[in-house]
Amino acid sequence: MIKSLVRMLVPDSLRQSVYQARQRPWKRDISQWCQQWCQDRRSDESVHAEQYAQAFGKPLDLKTPRTFNEKLHWLSLNYQLPIMTKCADKYAVRDFVTDRGCGHLLNELYGAWDTPEEITFGSLPAEYIMKVTHGSGQNFIRRAGDTRTVGGMRSQLAQWMKRSEYWHSREWAYKDIQPKIICERLLKDVHGNVPPDYKFFCFNGEPHMIQVDTDRFTTHHRDLFDLEWKRLPFSLEYAASGQEIPKPETLESMISAARALSQGFPFVRVDFYAMGARVIFGEMTWYPAGGLGKFTPDEYDAYYGEMLSLPQQERP
Image 1 (spheres, rainbow, N blue to C red):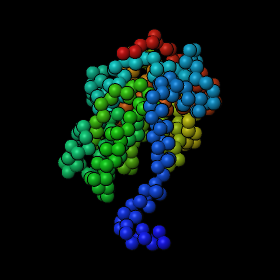
Image 2 (cartoon, helix red, strand yellow):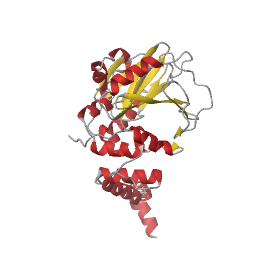
Image 3 (tube, helix red, strand yellow):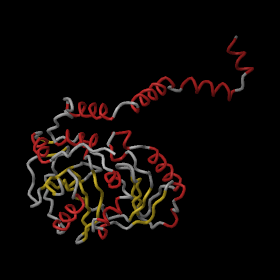
Image 4 (cartoon, rainbow, N blue to C red):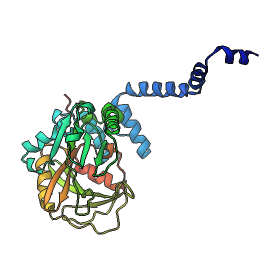
């Protein structure tokens, strides 16, 4: 009787709205909001400690850090130079690279914008790579024939612009980066694929290990070499490819550039792309894998920890 009366007196559209509202997981939404609110108010040190414990199954030792990963967390919490923020910024780092005498290694820049709405997509070439300057992995490659719409790309960029890598991982160098969007030339090898990139682990201005990632979007493999291009007897997060990785003809040029860019820092990873006889600068990374990268066997975590000499605490 009552249901029949409601159907007669209440319009269908209103009844449908009420029904949909009752179906929404509002309790879950409120719970997630509360969790995020509490997470944002935790100290950086507690977040680092929790992430480390979840990854390695043991407490993070910040008083007497010994391993490579422990020391990366210590650096994030205690060694905070403004120049590190500049180098983590994918746009501002271009000035740093130029100042260090490596400006000729920079990729061609098509544009830089503060908001997605400012981008003049019609003036860009058919192929490019677009990324936000304050994030990690937030980029998309556009090739000829790509069917993505301008609206879709603006929407994706808008979402990335709202994300803070610092609040996600508490990696200090990302904290004060002013978000921007940049567009660069799409780098391709002779087969039209993204060329291999070479990541140099540099300790006190001296490269010691080279990481080469292959098939990152399918069966991710990671091969590790010393400066003589000899394979290293361990893995880092991913297994080796089991394939021959040819020594790049530009190896010495990349080593020289890595030295120039890493001078004055206790640790930084400097990345390059090799395009035949040309080297292209990629980025600088202060805390690879957020200090959660697992060595196998794990004794090499301690080995590279000994190589990383911690400086005095320094905060802005």
